[in-house]
Image (cartoon, rainbow, N blue to C red; front, side, top):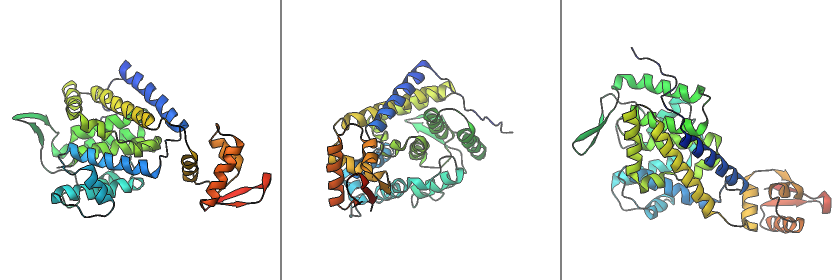
Length: 322
């Protein structure tokens, strides 16, 4: 008999509380600096880094330049399997909005797309026992395959019904999924992808935050955190590790973007908000630090660039997004 365990085991340590506070403050700063909707160029760069790093952890040898070429529909010379992995990942990361992080069928669909043409049972839970071997030692023996559907069902119930904060739930899901090892292959990349989706639901910036790069740069720490959690029988160490990775990656985003927004940045951000009709006051409500003269210049430039249409004069002027 499989016993349901609605809440996977973990403890909230002082380190976890401190990291949550730091991350929450930085997310506030991200929103205040208009980085929750980065420029198309930065989005593309971060997507390439995410795909490169997540697949590099799994042994893919394609470079960021080759992934960029594939993203631009150019031909690339490389191992057939590696090219297929990248093309599958591009397809997934270009359509993240299609996946529901709390829906198990969506989880299967994502795995099917991610592992298409790479394994025979893409999108289906494994039907054999598996162990992770490092050298001559079995590092992790996954639960019997008969238990996988029940364990994954419980994990999705936790995700849907627990009132735990999203940051912690995302780490718990990532660890527990790796522990269960539900698929014959592709578990690592699915764990990282699904954590991104869980976080995106509350914090849109995570769509563009390549925390996989930090994992890839020091994979030993990632595997050590997984192993320590396995040994202790709870995900506490992995939560601490992943929150630290997230904190550093947000810090790097803020550092990279520590600049004064120029006219182009402001217009690009404002247009991304999709306000169909607006006034100069609406524009200044978003960019509180600019003068009315600067706002007028920005809006004049936006109209010249055909981003929106100006209707009326002086205080009766309104703008329509094109």
